[in-house]
Length: 232
Image (tube, rainbow, N blue to C red):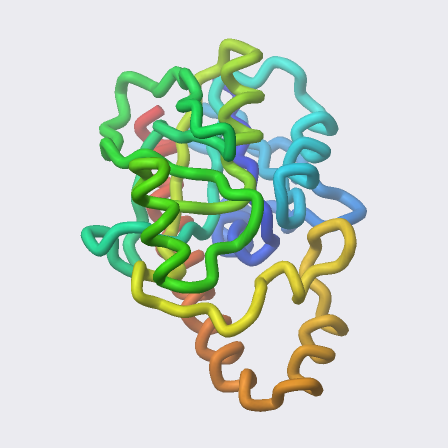
């Protein structure tokens, strides 16, 4: 049976998928799930925390050395107006901050979009920043971790896909840096989020709306991921 590893940055990105597969969610103390079987395939799910360094640390700790297919699962922002908030896209093209496209190996039995995905060093909070990034890179989506997974797959001659839920559209403005709600290792921190709210209570409605939107999006991502897994 093929071994498929799914890497995400945040626990909430994988929670519905773990529930549907019947495995415990990854955590800081146990970043990889126990291997499970789905449709005659072995599945591993790992969570890193935000940022490329955290993702590299997760990849190095993968308990199985011979992964056949790597999947980068998570939330991304749109850099173009043809990609809408709430969509779930499947692709394989990506580039990092060096603006070099990574030569990935997509599974030939999966149809992917042509969009290029860009991994930035920092979150893009404003429409002007997103538009500038799109002009510089030619990319349609952005996150802060995916290139690490793509490079790892390429270095190990494994196939690679990304499955991304669009958490913010081109014209959406993020009122705070997402990393401000994370601890030093990139994991979500309730205490830091509370600190932000204490300094600016007006952010509470936005945070609640974001939590609801991303919960719905994570469920949609889980459905798409199960669909893709059944076809691999």
